[in-house]
View 1 (cartoon, rainbow, N blue to C red):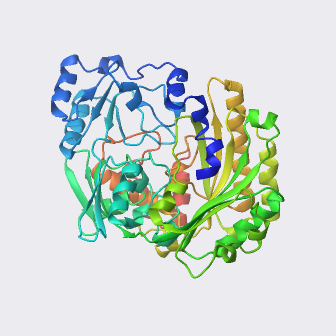
View 2: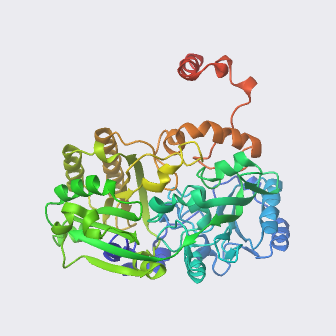
View 3: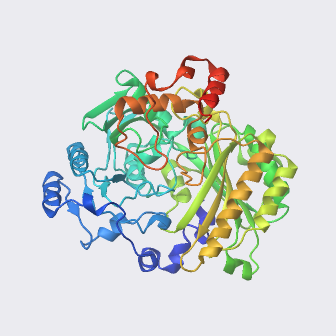
Amino acid sequence: MALELRSSRRNFLVGLGGFAAAARLMPGSALAFDKGACPPPSAWTDLARAVTGGVLRPGDPFFADICRPNNLRYGATLPAGIARCTSAADVQACIAWVQRQALPFAVRSGGHNYAGFSTTPGLLIDMTLMAGVTPVTADGSIVTVKGGTLNLLAYKQMERLHRTITHGRCDTVGAAGFLLGGGIGFNMRKFGVGSDLMRATELVTADGQLVRADADTDRDLFWACRGGGGGNFGISTGFTLETRPAGSVTVFNLTWSKDLPKVLKLLLSELASAPDDFGSKIAVTIPSRQEGCDHAPVTLSILGQLHESKFKLEEIFKSTWALRDGSRSQVKENVPYWQGQDFLTETTFPYYYQEKSSYMRAAAIDDEAIAAMFDWAGKMPATAMPVSFKFFQVGGAIDRLGRTDTAYVHRGSDWLFTVEANWWSPTDSAQQIAQTLDWQQRFYDDVNRRTGAVGAFQNFSDPSLADWQDAYYGENYAKLAEVKRAVDPGMLFTFAQAIRPAKKPAERGPSASLPGGARREAEAVERLP
């Protein structure tokens, strides 16, 4: 989103004083768990002695800063304490402690979980002190990334190695959550999603053991960690990744100001055949309430990069190149890779939001679907923040693996579609927020129906998604449930959309041994009263 976000949703808070405003406007909080489960002061002292990074309690300096999530929608849930881990041994001590105290917990590095799954009224296990990238090979082609590393640190250390991976643009996102859910970015069409470059991971499981999972050891767990989502199978303390040389790139931020439906249709159809060296994200941005009062129009832009290629940008963009707004478009040609990322990087600030996503084929997006999108844009009940509907370009190297080769199932599409709902509290009333969320749901449902879009990206966690199991994981959910039963049968690691352990064969009923459709029909019969 880079340049267009200088005046849009995530950087909107700069004008409100950034983090200071977030602290002033955050609603009050209360602990939600049973008071009978509150650990005595001596238990907190024991934990502080066991965790080398220390433990913060409410009222301690920096407590509010560390526990604040990126999505302020969940900012009212404050932890009873924050354990600041610096090693796998600290993580193991936390797991043993929460089990003794029967206390809920959550794990966090960047705190960007869209649905607030990295918040808790119990113990917040903070991984951010456990950070860094270390080369394993002399040329940096294999590196280890510690479990609390944020993107910004990863960028700097990868730049020193003259290497890169598939990575996101937001510099405060945690690498662990990014990788465990698949991980999308402008390199994914060239290298695959982030988890496709994972060669091993270390994690602390529910029994307190530190486990290394790779293609030879704990293969099913390794498979599950490549797209099965964070927080499901343990606490990842480190990753081993394969890197790629960081050459030069051409980066761009192009805008169009006329004939937006026509341009969007052309972009979605023509760019689907772009070379794998090309990565992009299209954004149609709807102005905020104040911007609307100032007669700001809906805008269309595309942000992205092109690795060294025999093709030029104008050849890739085809008919849309001549239609762009030249005075508002920017192109930086053949710059060093990490200098190009400075142009693309997004710095985010806390605000309130919900995102909905699905995967589309370009051929299914016809003129009527495009017209419906802009019709819905015109019906947006404006809030204090702008919103966008976007298309992240997928395909390319992502499709070199099959849907079941890793837990990341979303292969074979051209675009990852998302529609936002953004607001600012208390500027926007509860009624305005409810209207905005209703608009978002109806927009999403209509576009999916018209385009045949399916699934949802697990790293864009959507708390309103009904069939999240199928949407996030498709046919891989059954195997993920088996892995969950093997490593966490008691659901120590749990949240609203956590993978559930598979039932044992004896518990599944007589339909378990039947094939495919027959089994589904039999299961439907078994559920009848």
